[in-house]
Length: 104
Image (cartoon, rainbow, N blue to C red; front, side, top):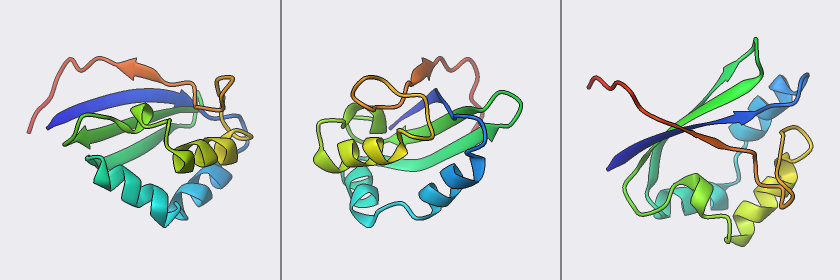
């Protein structure tokens, strides 16, 4: 198991919509994440900066950010592109974070 963290960027004024869309995450996307080993996945929002901070445990070889070849992931990216800062392929701009401390 490995833990990873990354940050993404929410467009101003879309906090409620972002939360709503994630509370209604598509079952097939949730299944894909689980099947590829992504577990214990949390996203936190810093309201002062609109930065989204994500943490996930990975029990496979790929994080949620590495399964972008899957059609359902690309569809999710397209769905979220209007409320997040994204790359040309609509994947969220995502910056990996380095762990300096962990306490179990």
